[in-house]
Length: 154
Image 1 (cartoon, rainbow, N blue to C red):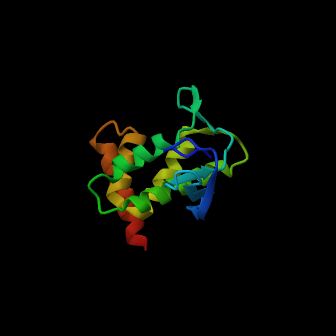
Image 2 (cartoon, helix red, strand yellow; image 1 turned 45 degrees about the horizontal axis):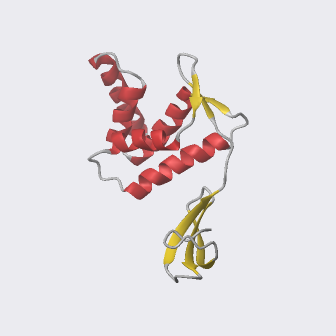
Image 3 (tube, helix red, strand yellow; image 1 turned 90 degrees about the horizontal axis):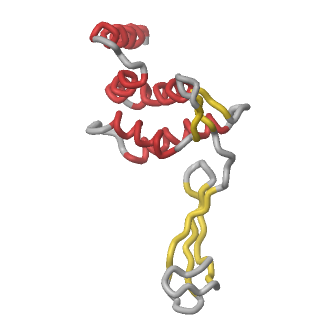
């Protein structure tokens, strides 16, 4: 690992710890030459997932795109960034544990909605309204009624 300050190739690892559940390792390093410290993150290189869109197109899975969608749904809600990140990590882990490298966008949407439903009902409805493309107020009301029925059963 090259020092970002002096470009020296020799550094020492001072501290190393695992971060999250997706096999990320945080390393605190010190340059042998200039003695400055810096942090690096290592992530296990995984095989790319492919998302099959509703119209049949295929595109690479982007974790950041998933995170942005969940963050948008959780905007102005009392949900910590840590909980959002954790939910996205869980969804990604479930996708990577599937037997296939190609996953339909509907499967991703269902997994996200399942997480959001437990996390925050308003965020869930926001995400569902975009994901399910509620065409009118009736579709929206039907979803709310279904949620109320489930809450009453508990």
